[in-house]
Amino acid sequence: MPANEFDYDALYEFITSSRDKTLLEMASKCGASYVGSTSSMTSVLAHFHYLLSFWRPVNISMLSTAYIDQFSSFSAITRAPITIFLRYRGNGIYAIDAGKMFEKEESVLSFLGRSMEKMLTLPREHMEKYRKELSHTLQPRERGQPEAYHYTQCGGILMRSQLDCHDSRLPGSGVFDLKTRACITVRMDLRNISERSTYEIHHLTGKYNSFEREYYDMIRSAFLKYSLQVRIGNMDGIFVTYHNTNRIFGFQYISLEELDLAIHGSREDDIGRREFHFSTKLFNEALDLAVKRFPEQVFLCFLIGANE
Image (cartoon, rainbow, N blue to C red):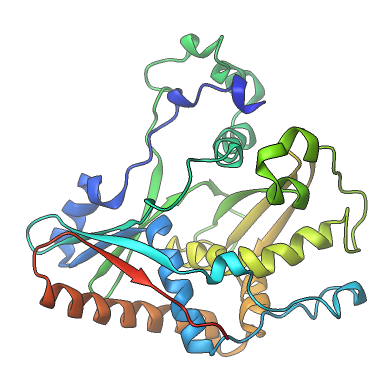
């Protein structure tokens, strides 16, 4: 369904950590000093990965020989400095919000991601109700329906993760995340999507027009964020939908083990889980130092990663 035909006002409004009353109440009950969501935590924890791994390259050994001479570093946008707000919310609790002040307004891909999640999880006849001309037929309970969340506490930090899907055939919690992935030409030129959306995927491997190209780009720009989201949400993996904004080309399920293999170069020694806990501990200690110096205030934090 084209973005201009979908009624996004019928969806649940995203609530930042500082405005989430349930999250703040849970933090008070479990003795947490800081609260955050995946959207405000993953970029921070990614920078701790760069620090702890000493800018270790990603692992692309599973790709074909077409990628032997390609970059194996994280993409420039993922290495860029980030900002977060630390907002005092009373009772000794601080909320971590993503610093959106330097970001542009949401792109059509952000909107499409939300509507495509509905498309992938609802029967067709129910999905049609979200068209602008039919959204008045939605029942009150269907309009603005709250999301489901998982909560994880690491030390003094309580983290919230949105839950998308569940399948009893998966190990552990059986929960997995939905990801919609636009093709390379669309991602690289969002101002001219109508022109770039003619690009299609025809092959499994190769530098262009292939699933392998999209997988390679995800390793460099998205897998680290995805793996952190999966861990925060106690999920098994992600379900990726490849598209060009007009057409869907295919689907791929990627487990947390597969994400770890690409990011850390190994599935052994539980390296991904151990790094996650250590990164969270370091972040917790950094926050303690910050609030000790600026108690009960709202302030902006900059995280700047040095180039490798």
